[in-house]
Length: 112
Length: 112
DNA sequence: AACCGATATGTTTTTAAATACATAACGCTT
DNA sequence: AAGCGTTATGTATTTAAAAACATATCGGTT
Image 1 (cartoon, each protein chain N blue to C red):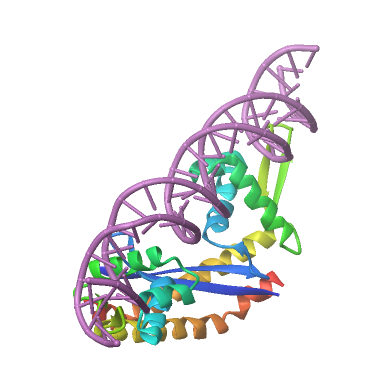
Image 2 (image 1 turned 45 degrees about the vertical axis):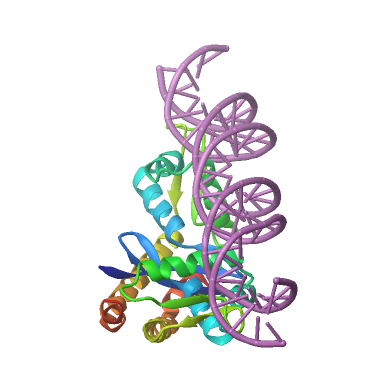
């Protein structure tokens, strides 16, 4: 049984900015409050996660994720309201695309 | 200026079957009548192109691309009507997705 | 029989991404 | 001042995909 899959992302000047990876990362950071734990949840090296955060913040008008080191729990990571807004809209877009895909039985029919 | 990008493909049991790569390959084979020329047009190694053809035919009920060696022009590649049908429907799907994307200014607005 | 342009296929090399590993720095708590 | 959990960052290793290279093969034409 074949199925249609879709992946969408946001880019600027050919550079990927926000896609499935960052989306999941934002989700996990929000849940865990820590970049290292978020990365671990995703089976992602901390290094890679950290680089994703840098890129997210670099390409955004305002910061998306605030990293703090030291302090009560050794530091932590927080998702800004702006990041949350993007998260919600991205989620929304994915939903709409999924709805569209569901209606595409023509393609699946020709594939058998 | 940020923009939304989308990529869609068809898979079976987690294995990619038909996506942007094969789609372009089918297009070029149809135009050139030769796998080697099609691959060259795509800046793709012949080897890789050949492997894509094998996979396309393997995962499909009926063959999508017929390769012939020897003969008048040394051989050649042809796209079957079934492949053409998939090609058209895939093209169609992409168009519909693009239309949907155009309506998604909410996401682009939050990004600024 | 020699030649030609294409397919067929094995082996090696290149490339880029991700991981792994190691260590430093931070700032609060005790 | 010692300890903790986290962020920060450099270097080396692994991995997988793609490309590059080298031949072999086929079946028509000349």
